Image (cartoon, rainbow, N blue to C red):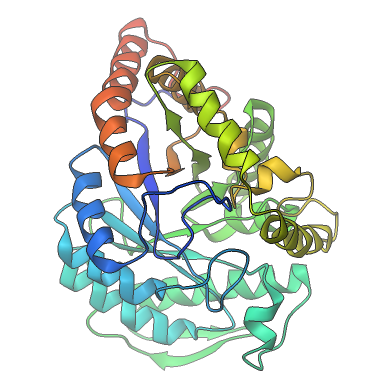
Length: 373
């Protein structure tokens, strides 16, 4: 069993895509433009956030009519902040890993070592086929992503990069300048998501962080167990992030009413279209355990099952639930909000101090930071 005093970390979904983080016609005082997002990034790093994740969408879909490209937007946010680490979501198949390695190395140099990537194997077929790119079968997409990550790491850490795979090849490739290296960070951090067995095994073999869709305690425990088992076979350690949509209000009744209104005002056509697309992608996994395979309509109103994590209620209730997830092995929460500026400030003022108090109390009692490590 592993004891660690390291505090749980927090990230937020960057709203660089129009429509906010819920597919609902409820009022959302959130904007997808750069001026709003620059203000939000500064506010977030001043309210306890360690990371921000820029979404990737290439075409209009399911309530997201407009999108800013993730890597360029991430660099802009890095240059607007001082401490925040910004993760750019990228698709193998639409990026060559050598070109991305160069871009991220530059972003990392310019930001003092704060760039990261989230490798997205892909669920939206149209983003590939409408660009004339092949749409691979589910497990093949993960094989390509694994090679993509191996190539990134090879380029970032080797003076004479070599790789000979089924999807990518390198021949004596030397990237200069390299990204900045630091103790515990030999290269920019590599994140990935995915619920399937292929995704979990890939995380154990090559990724630094594994993002889970919204999950309850049992679901998180199962995923952490599987990824850790695979990582142990390769002498690796993978850290865990959990998606959650956070609704913190002064009373539980207020928070629950916000959730009720979000779902009641859901854009039904967009949610059902999204659900059809992502459930097909989830069922296409070789074992049928892909993303969203068991998501209900209300879950899909938040793109990544964020309601299922249960971060809805008073600051005290949410803080206790966050620390309970930490005990199971969650290292980072990737959060979405309804009204970003107001909700991020409320989180930093009301929720985060309670989380830190609970962590300190657990440390004093000698309680394990992770259960089942």
